[in-house]
Structure formats: structure tokens, C-alpha cells
Length: 484
Image (cartoon, rainbow, N blue to C red; front, side, top):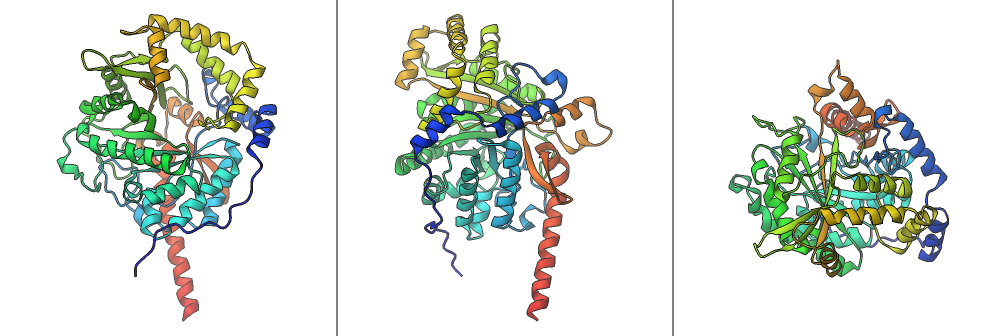
């Protein structure tokens, strides 16, 4: 039987407050009392030595949330966090997903970041002929006041751009993460055995840039993407290819505003490397590719062993044909002070990342309460004059205004595996779990708990899917008995 995956019209759209009313409300009260209480409680949960002026958890965010949605994925990647039983797990109902979103909102608050994930949820709902369901899920999350990010390998969207349009225009999707690297098996036109280095995938990256630009043009809605990469023994030597691709054209850094790398973790179906890539090796590779000495702890997202963040400005190629890069978070007191001030002044804004009227009104309301923040900005910009490489600060600023230079964020997430989580655990592991900045609401023994992603992937995911599979079989059995 043919299944029509085209999204149908959504008759549930409800009128909202005018944008001007919402902007005024955000200007007058940028951060709600509910959000402030959540942040304060989260701060108290952190290990004492992690409560620093550059800590984002408990100040900017409680954590980033995730959903345990559809588990299916049609790819068979060499480094996959999904267990072997993932494709047998049933699709959750819309009500179950709404309950998960509600539970995540309870601990994230407004503008909380929520990853819509599981397996590849786009793949799962499309293959099941239930593409409308994902639209409703994302729409529900945005309606709650969360900021959903759709996690996907992107193949379905690449082959069905109309569906991507619907997710943006009807569901309100503004963020997505597209995973592209040499570990992927099942990508049409790119058989894994033919991939020798990351540069072999540049035509695919170019195609996604065209896709993202196209959906923004067709829908008139902003959309930003992150490029996620698993770093293994096979591609560590060509990680610089991806950095070079980002610097090749400003378009690439407009479509993909973040490069997120994850050193391989021995979880799920992963075929662990003989010489596994460490976080140190991955970060050093990024630094060498940019010819910069990137700092790993300019800002803390939980524990310093878990996440590292940097920001760079990619500049046009010079006479040597090589693009330049300016470290926007150097190891300087001015940069560290600015990070501290950003967290102090804009704490509670969360992860909106948008520049619409409401978001700007919220930021203006916060800035009006801390006007001396501009002094920290001026001091920071003055300090960058010492960091320029081959171009004046004025010329760099002009290139930025003209769109020739583009900033990108660099993120590294270091996930733990089951062996590290097993008892007896070290104090470092306990501190990492306590400070985790990536937790999803999961129902355990009838109660919703915020579970760190490391615990989910390393220990709990396979068990959770087994329970779902067993419950689904029991439901089918009961239905058959009633029918007979």
C-alpha cells in the first residue's frame, strides 16, 4: 500500500498575542520568576568548585534537554549510540511525546534548549508514513516556550525539501543539527567504503548549504544549523578538511553556525577504534587546522571534562589562498571577564539564538539593567587588536559587516561509556554527572527524572527500549485477544 508522506494542513493553529505585545512583555520582564527559581535551584546542585563566574549551568541555563523519541534509524553507522534493539522499539504516541516535552519544560523553563531526538526522528516518522506527527511534536514544544533543535542525518530532508519547508513554516522549527562524517553507512551516493577522508563529503555539505538557504528563502523564516561530527581514528587526520570547508565560503558559516565534534565513545553499536580518539587529540586537531591555540575552559557548560567551547571569526583568504581565523575567546583576562559579564547580564535568556523583535526586546530589557556591560565589551574589543593576524581590527570589522567574515562556534562533547559509569565510580565521574549540562526527562518507576545523556547511552537506553518493545507486544496481544 502506498503511503503519502506529504504533510497535511494543520487546522489546530491558534491565534497568538501580537508580536508587539510579546516584545513589550519581554522588555519589562526579561526573565520570569519561574525561570529564575529553576536557575537558582540548579546552581545549588552543582559541585561547589564548579560554581565559578564562567559557569553557564545555573546562570544561563539549567541544562540542555532531550526527548527519547522515535528510536528508528535507517543508517548503520560505525559509531552509533543506539543499541541493537533500537529499530524494534515502537513509535511513541503523540501524547507520550507531549508528556515528555512537559516534563522537560518543568526543569528547563522558558527558552530552554530541547533536542528532538531518539534515533533519527525525521527518518523514523517519514518511513512510518507519519510525517505530520513530527510537525505536531515540534509545534507543541515551541508552543510551550522551548527552543527545539531537530537532530538528524538529514537525508530525508535533502530528498524531500517540501517536508523541511513544512517543519519550518508550520512547526516553527528554527534549529537543527545535521550529522555528516565518514562514520555514516547508508547515505545515498556516499557508500562508506568509498570515503577516504572528510573532504570526500564536501559535495554533500554543499548540498545541505543549498537546502538550508532554499528553505529560508521559500519560507521567509530564519533557520540555523549545527554540523555534528564523530571523531574517530579513521577521520582524526582529516578533521581539518571540515574546518577548511567552513572557511571556503561565508555561505557555509551562515548555514552552519556551529561545528560540534564528539570524540568516539564506546556505547551502543560503536566499533571502537584500536587507538580511540581522546578529547585532547580532537581539540588539538581543531586548533592546528585553524592555526590557533584554542582554550577549552573559557566558558564552562557543567564539568570541564564534558564540554569545551570556542568561537572564531573566519576571514577571507589572503594572498596565499588560505582563509584566516581570529580567536574570539582567547586566553586573556578581557575575554574571560566578558564571558562572565555575558552570563551575569543575559543569564536566563537560554538558547533562543534568534534575532526577532521579541528576542531583541528581551535582550534590551536585560542590557538596560546592566549598562556597564558595554564597558566590558569595549575592553574586550580593544584587547583583540593584539590578536589580529594579518589584518587590522577595523578591516576585520568591515569584513564582518560586509559578510565576508563569519563567526562560528566550535563545541566538543566528551561522552562517557558504561565502564566509566559502573560502580565503584571516581569522584570526577560523580561530579560530571552532578554537573551534567545535557539531561532529558525520562519516566522511571512512575516519576520523571532528568537523566544525563551519558547514563542514557551507556546504561539505560537498551533497557528502556526493551521495556517499550515488551509493552508494545503486550498491547498487540491484548488487541488480538479482544478481536478474537
